[in-house]
Image (tube, rainbow, N blue to C red; front, side):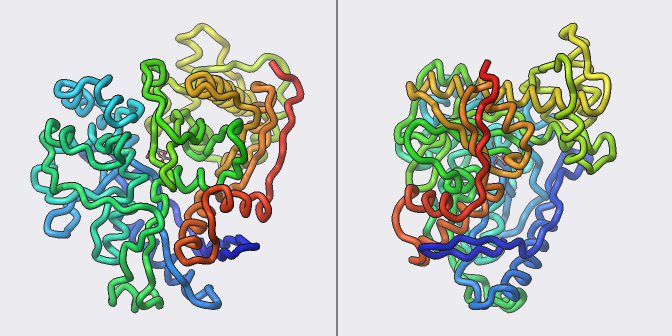
Length: 451
Ligand code: LFR
């Protein structure tokens, strides 16, 4: 994404796009991170060619938790994909034998997701060969600059960072038997990671380009791009996941928060994302993939016209996490719970939309209760914010106004932090969000029939 940012403007243009999905192999699901690297270089070349005044910097963000293992600077294997069904089996058991879940939560504030980095590392058979672990954005930054760092917002998703100090939890790392030198030094969003290696700069046509740390966890960048104002607004960052929560200054490390699986992820400028992972548009995209269809818009229109009772199922059932035949899995959930399975494509899509909205409404209520903060407005950002049926269902189920947009919140948050590092914008999150509010398309959904 090519971004342009200044005190009164904020614009994005897609310089290049490419697909990125799970790659099945003998030993499980992987990412093709080498292809990701190639595509990133192609994109950078296209961006450099399209930027009239030249590029000032580049910032990298991606999904969290997954990592590459390196030895002597060389990647040992393509990283595992967190949706690999086998990932979640051995890791949690091995870790919890040494450090019980309640203590982990007190130390790191992280919700239990079976694929959190610490669990994956503990079960990784190649760990002993490695002398460095880098999360995906840090790995790409390393390939661009030669500098090995751990950007702090993403590091907070490893389960190895102290929620109170924001530093690596050395005692925890030792108790888990992980070599401390495996982890790189932490850097904050806004810091310069380095400049493009000479051969990279020459290849992409941007010699000496600065690589700036941003909220390298995509959700951290997305929340920078949420036009939040005031303490009574919540957000849903809606992509493959629906990340539902609040921005806080201090953690809520209660047993109730742990039981509700609410996490404390590190945000830009020392904020805390108090949120829980709910299923997202993954349910829809895997359903369309199963049907070999790509007409989501038409399906949503048909779904909007469905009348009569709609089956609401539990989108949080673990059977929906791995890639596969979602319509069959939804049917199996319905059969097990003695409810009618949706009979046709439109009903199934409607059922997914209503079930997601119901889960988000419940998570919002829980967030408000746990944090002791009333929620009076909900922001939905990310690709899923374009789904008007879902946004309206959410407004109706919560009885709250829903502000949808921006769609590209993550890229905006990334570019804003770079813009601030370059001095093109000044101020804190409030000023950056004010710029988002003034410059981006937002759509408001009022609740029609609060329940
Ligand atoms: C969203 C996200 C979530 C994280 C999940 C796995 O893309 O980064 O925040 O929990 O992916 O990394």
